[in-house]
Length: 369
Picture 1 (cartoon, rainbow, N blue to C red):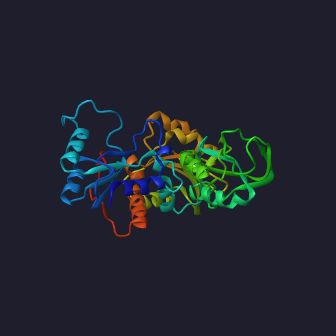
Picture 2: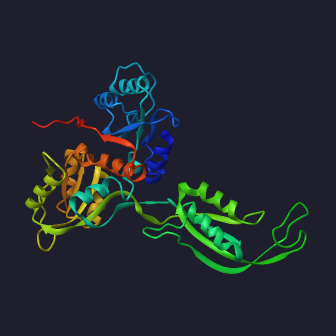
Picture 3: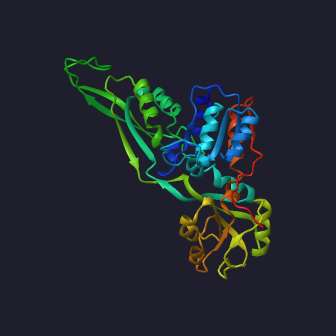
């Protein structure tokens, strides 16, 4: 199987356009045209992981964290990053990473945490904005169905759990072609009036090129009239963090034990329980963010979460709970350790016969005594 086929599959699930500006998701090393026999899935592509890939004869490593975040000026083996890249090149092993684009997906990293905790009624804590585009176009009414089908096939018209969504309105359009035209309807030099259907569809911004190409290919007019408008709406299906509700309310201490079991934790750093938790004095509404999520604290509070589960809180940031919420810092690795399962699910669903394995290496650089 070609590497580019695997990349297309992964990026359909977690589009690179959703990654944060500081990130470096995507193909890190290797050629898209290379043949891939098997893959190793991991959280971090460390030297030990690369050695495991070599021993298992895997020629692709799929990681959550990119091994390279910024440009390398030298590759001499003086750092673990350089040594990983050298081993990858020497052994013809490709490296691919899906990082914040996977974090920002509704079915990504945070959804996996919610799933393990059995949360329901989940929603994005900080939805993305300015990621949706609305297309307006005008089509002869007899061709409206064919154009709509082409737009839907290109990815337009999907809203949440619904697809093939559009708004349509009938009306008359007029135009006059000059001597250089070959009009589909009417005659050159004469104003023509045509019954048309106005079609409106919404789609993610990164699909613009494909949607417009589909429109032009399926539209009968020589000159296709269309408008693209960036929407300022919050996109509830992509963004940072998630919040949901426990199946059953739990006492604070019981919830910590539950959290420890479900997330396979050795330790939890947390703030004191708050009197406000809820009327029953139990935990019910839970906010989560895989990795470093302190930037979402105010959003967790605004969403009336009883507890915020994330990682990498600094000492003074714990004071920001201000008796409004419980902060539970479970560790960066621990909060994202099940991300590998997401890669496995995507590959299994799309390539049932493709060989892959989840790393046996615990890449957590933090140890507990």
